[in-house]
Amino acid sequence: MAKLDVENGIDSLLQLVSFNINEEEFGLDILKVQEINRMVEITRVPNTPDFVVGVINLRGKVIPIIDLRARLGMPDRAYDKDTRIIVVELEGKVIGFIVDKVNEVLRISKSITEPPPPMAGGVNSDFITAVGKLENRLLILLDLNKVLTTKEQEELVEV
Image (cartoon, rainbow, N blue to C red; front, side):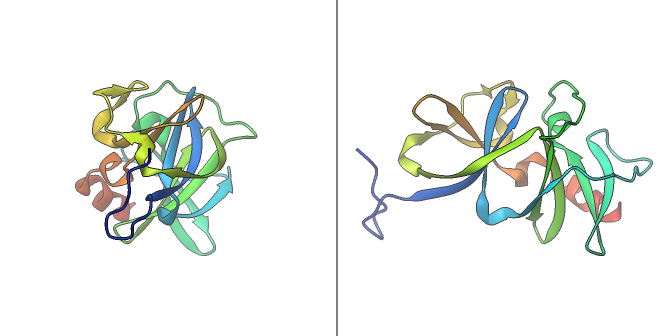
């Protein structure tokens, strides 16, 4: 039975963009996502952390690009036709995250999520808000505010 949102008397729904990195499926709150783009040429920037690939020009705005695979400590992989850049806004800063493949927009009930185990899919649970149990798969819900520390977010503004 679904848990009810006491204030509204309805089950709380999460709207998520689902994507893959490695064999794992992740979800991001759709409200944080500004757009999803195909891979474009990325300009390298010296003296940046390993997971910062560089910057792109997005309609006249220079935005830093982070390889989410590298940030989550997963093995490197060549980009292909499915590789995408998910552009998000974090704390007022626009940042792009490279993912292996974007799947779909999902609406799931908050009641089918539970707190993450210490290591979910080989990803540090500090980066995870919850794990959603769908019919035949698990969806790891990422907290992008924790994927990058405040200091790292500030450093990205300087890129």
